[in-house]
Length: 198
Image (cartoon, rainbow, N blue to C red; front, side, top):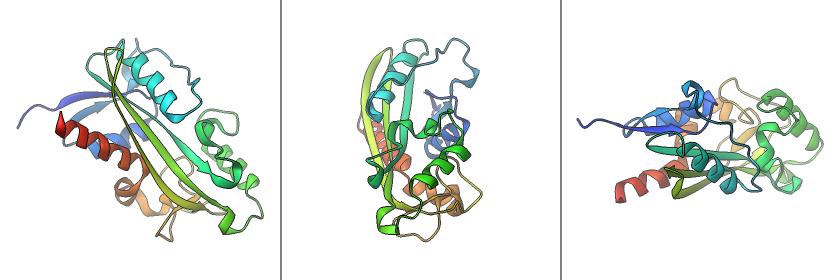
């Protein structure tokens, strides 16, 4: 068996790293930035998921050898004009406060019928090496949002989001199902196709 290639994911989010590692384990040894002291904090100043992912991938690939994969993803709710969007992780004001973000979203959708609670998780992945973008991939999964959280697994908005064709939230379905149909899984499918063709 050939040695697996190293892939650095431009994040310090352990949940995100674990998801990506699980999906790419046949191809890569996946690590993130949590143990890399020289990795800078990249400010996400982009107006789109693609812009933010490119900022992170390019910035980190300048200081880390090999390929760097950056993910920017979030929830888009139609009736809220696409919010929380690129601000998904800090929707309530504090980066990564899932409970506060869910609370704010529930308040924003309070009293709205299911037909007005539609949205999608969207993910854009950018692959870079030595400060140059190699490729970009995207994926989305449609669904609707509940009035109250359900389920104990997952992170972010998973306890509120029911993917189309299912009756349970991502937080109830668990990683085995989520990793087959999520926005990140679909973007990673594109990455794998690209890798096969290079």
